[in-house]
Image (tube, rainbow over all chains, first blue to last red; front, side, top):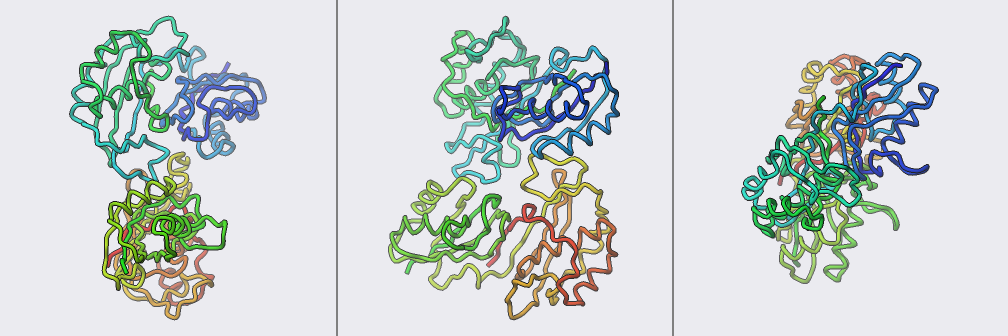
Length: 245
Length: 245
């Protein structure tokens, strides 16, 4: 079997997330599978590294699919970019070992979160960031963020929909900077539970709004209770930035 | 009479341009007039500096309106940003002399044009740039651009819809650079005819595609014929960047 690894960029605004749902539901996986199936003339499953949620964007999502017939990587890329809508773009296609699995073999994922922290909105960022009017205390956020580093049980940053056996994840990096007028929060870890990044950012926003103390994130982690985080950051500020294998 | 100067930013994607049309037509001026009229409780006309076309964006459009009742600039800004859709944003409100006229008193306008010049599209720039797949010869464009500088009769860069008495305009600056993966063309002049910037950029694109020689722009200018420019650059790559008084 031929196995192909795709690097995909998308504006998630029009989609009900990555994962294929029922017929008529607009999802990234669904769109890709439709076009790929038409191309290769056989049924196949696209395995995505990250099941991004409704409205979440990707700068670099990784997916793979297998097929019996052989195609060149240029053929696949050209075909997909021709037939996919222009809010989804395949930036790279590679032939990979038959054993390669886009999800199981991922060593780390990096998510970006963009906050537009100005009194007035920005017409060009309205779909690509969370708008927070009240001035956030950036220094307090930067001081609080390292509490996420290392291995933790993230039950209190998960969602009741999470059916994972283990809630332990390791966070390698939490970086916060200002870029082009946005506050950009970059989080890299070995894996993330459903809603985890948006709840982590939500907890940092609460610190930035001085609604909770910096030490409260420590307490939320320790509590293992899901109702402790008051704010879930908007989906449209979140981007899957990178996957490492 | 009180006279107010507004600085306005908008994503023109959903609009049929700046200028008010008939009822039911979605225009920026129409939206603003509706909200301002509701606020001040009297009929007024919003005078915009530039009648941006369908789909064209503004980083800083200038407009003004008069009214009998006095409002504080904060009141106006807060009210407008509350009731305007989030693809239009008022970034500044100033009280100005009763004689101030947003269009007649403008000394120069600067337009930005963004080109996404990569084989693959960019899902995040698809509404905010023109996508050109063929590699443009940037050096050729840079060499050709200065021909626009100075005072010229721009008849061949205008549109039959232009009913201006004079087609003479002065261009102060044509600057070309690469920014965040885009080719950005910045054009500053004392005024612009209908479609003029998009035709100027179109002529530069033709040079960049080696479809015409660099000297051809000189010939197009001299011809004073409207059918000489083969490419009119897409509306969604164009931004009104700045107006100076």
